[in-house]
Structures are given as C-alpha cells and as structure tokens.
Image 1: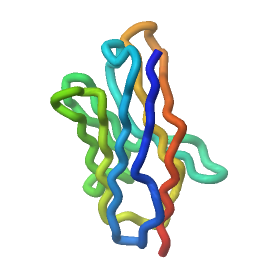
Image 2: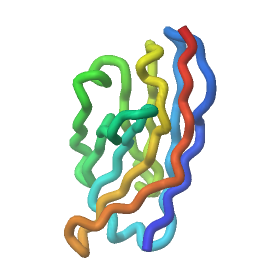
Image 3: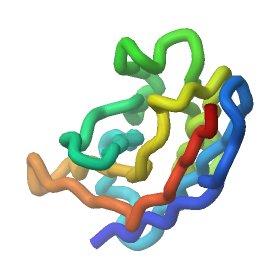
Image 4: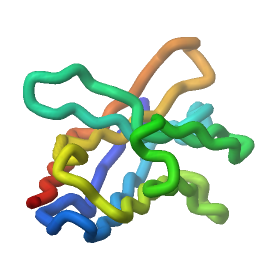
Length: 119
C-alpha cells in the first residue's frame, strides 16, 4: 500500500503562484509514476501533469508553459507542482496520484488540496 499526503494549496490572486507537494509513504518501491490531477465543481477529474520514474513528464495543454512537475531526486518519494500565472479556471481540488508497477493499473490517491484563484 502507498499513502499520499498533499500540501500547499490555498487562496491566491490571479497571476500568482503556488507550489503543491505530495509525499508518498509505504511501499514506495512499487510506484512507477506520479502525477497531479484536479477536479473542479461539476467537472470530471482531469490530468494536470505527470512524471515517470525515469523523469519524463507529461502536461495537460492548459498547464503547459505555466506549471512544472518535478520529483525529489534523493528520495524520489516526493513530487512537486509549481504553478505560475494562475487563472481563475485553475480553481479546483488537486489530487496527487501514484501509479503502481504491480498490480498493473493500480492507482493510489491523496486526499486532495484545494486551490482557489480569485480574479
């Protein structure tokens, strides 16, 4: 089992920045990739950014050029999401996700952290 704990959410004005952190504990050796998803009220959960164990990254079009995902190089159990130039439409609950090597398709989720961007 893997436990994920997010932090760093909050209220920020449009144009501002926030940095989210997610710390994984438990069977972290079983993690293949980590990422961030978000869910706004009345909308489906969507991928924001992901980083594979080898370091390759993937971003939603809405996040490209503004958000940066990174991973702690020493421990590799912490993932960050640096969010710049925030917009009102970035308001959502942000969830940390970890994908397991085995069993294939197993997902772990954090409890979520609220990000609110005021216009």
